[in-house]
Structures are given as C-alpha cells and as structure tokens.
Image: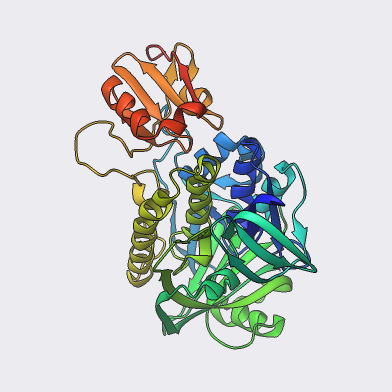
Length: 433
C-alpha cells in the first residue's frame, strides 16, 4: 500500500479527517483538484459541537481568536433600524457547555487553521480521474500517478466525482425558484458591529454580514443571473435605497441553487462519502460545514480501528436525514434568522439506540470541572477514555460520545469490540470541583 487512507477533497470535511488521522498515526494523503485553497467564505457559522471537535483536535485557540460570538442583526428600511436582535440572546458558556452559541467565522479561515495543523501539506492541482477497488484496497489515478490505498474517502463536494463514479444515488430535489446570489465583497458606509439586512415589498432581501478578521462582508441576496460586480452593486443600491453604502469590489461571487439531496449509501466497500459529497441542503441554519466536520470526526477513529466501519453509515445517515428536514423547515419558515435551539447548535444530536433518563450510550459527553481537571481536557486525544466519576464509570468514545455507562456495560462493550481495548485509557476524574 502507498497509504492507508486517500482523502479526496480539502475542504473543512477532508481537512478535519486528515487532522484526526494524523494524530492517530494513520498514514494518509489528501488531494484536491483545485490549484489552490478555496478563498471564498461559503459557510460562515461554526456551531458549538464543531468547536468541541476542534477543542479535541487541538485547534480551538486559533479558531476562537478568528471568530465572533453574538453578532447582532439589524433590519432596516433605508437608514431606519426597524429591528435589532441577537439570535443567541441569553446563551452564555457554562461548565457543561463551554461553547454556547454559533460563532461567525469565514470558512476559508477555518480551513486555513486546519491546513496549518497538518503534518504535511495538501496536494493541490491533483484531480482524481478514476479508481477501482478489490478485497484488499483501492487503486486510484490521482494526477499523473497511480496510488494504492486501503481506503478512499470522498470529501469532494456536492458535485462529487467519487459519488458519481460509485454510482451512488443522490436522492432529492432542486428548488429552481430558490436561488441566491452570494459573495465576499468590500463595502463602505456600514459599520462592522452588525449583520445588516434589508427587504422589499415584493419579498426580495439583501444581507451584508461582516466577516471577522477581514475587511470583507458576505453578500447574500435573493435573485438570479450571472454574478457580476455590476449586478451586486445594483442590488445594494436598489434594496438599501442609500447612496453612501457603496460596494467597491468582490473577491468571490457565486449563484447558489437550493438542492436538497442526500446519498442512499455512505459506504461502498472500501470507499466512503462525507460532507457535501453525501448531503446538500438549504444554507439556512449554518449546518453544512458543521455536519461535514462531524462526519469526518465520526469516521476518523473508525478508520483507525477498522472494526466499526459499518457504524459510520448507521450513525451518520440519520443525522443527514435530520439535517435536510431541519434546514428545509428553517428556509420555509419565513423567518430564517429566528432564535436558535439545541438542535441547530448540534449539541442535542445523539447516537442513542435506547430511551432512558440521564446520560445514556450514544449521548454527547458534557464538559465539566472535576478534582483532576476539565473533562474535555481529560478526554482530549485519540483514545477511548473511562472516566471514573462519583456516580460510576463512563466509557467515552474517541469522538466524545458515550459508549457505555456503568462497569457491566463497559465490560460488555469491550467484549463485543475487543480491538477498542488497545486504544483505551482510564482516568480518575473525581468529584466535581
């Protein structure tokens, strides 16, 4: 084998998977057909659960330094402020939830942080043009060479070559009447303390959101047509009605068509699909980048173990189904900037298979302070961890979800999955501090 895992696509999903594999000592290569990193914002909302992932992966500090919490919205008629609000009013960090609300951060900055943490660089300008698999591995043509890998993961976006080559169905629909012009622009006449919005009597709207750490705003507007600076300038003039709000230039522009689709399979043999290659949806609710990050986080430790790979689809496919339903509901609600709940923050997502009160197998392990340190710090690393808590031991998976609660359940888990004991450590957490 030339490598154990060949990752196709270097967006947030592929980079998260690469970083998780690197800390496990799993050999990988990550390639992307594009000649250079993508410089547009696309997504700009990072959810608390993704921040918990980045805490574990050791990159939370630069992420927090690059984004902004509680950016207030302002809705105008011309210059008059009609309404001002915070979608995350009252959400503040607690011991169990250290990251309490969505952060505004451009996706290109998230990806830059992940790239800089990798032990070796992404291979850009290296397209995947063919692959086939057998019982022992995958043979892929990437750029001018043939690569032999034990597994291949398609993180190559909504137009995924990997998915199409596998013949996996991308089931769903395209809403032709739901189109949005987006871009990263420079604007004068607006402060950077608010996410600014205008709407018209005929239902058209414009949003200009400052992107932290840059001099850019993300432009979002209902509309159609070939993206151009002239078109974007006209929309700003017409929908704001202001002469002193001026769009100067754009670093990226695109027309977004609402597709609501997901695959019928996340795995075909030794090939896996993750992120937008597996599910696309309305941008409402800032879920896409985050769900891809968590696809990768679910898959990484299973690729290292190799014995639980079937659970990747059984755990992540229901999440994708939930995602499409949630984002469609937000988009059609008539109020996409409504107050957010635990579902949109992705803190209530669970892999439970049984009901019950209190902490159960499949739940997210909450943070907290103990006599021996912060729980998230005790869990940090690539292993399964048994936390010896006052109420009894809890076995936590490498992705921060509970594997088993109580000694007998932990013994049964290890008995059913003996390889997991090779990646296990025990921590005496002690009572809450």
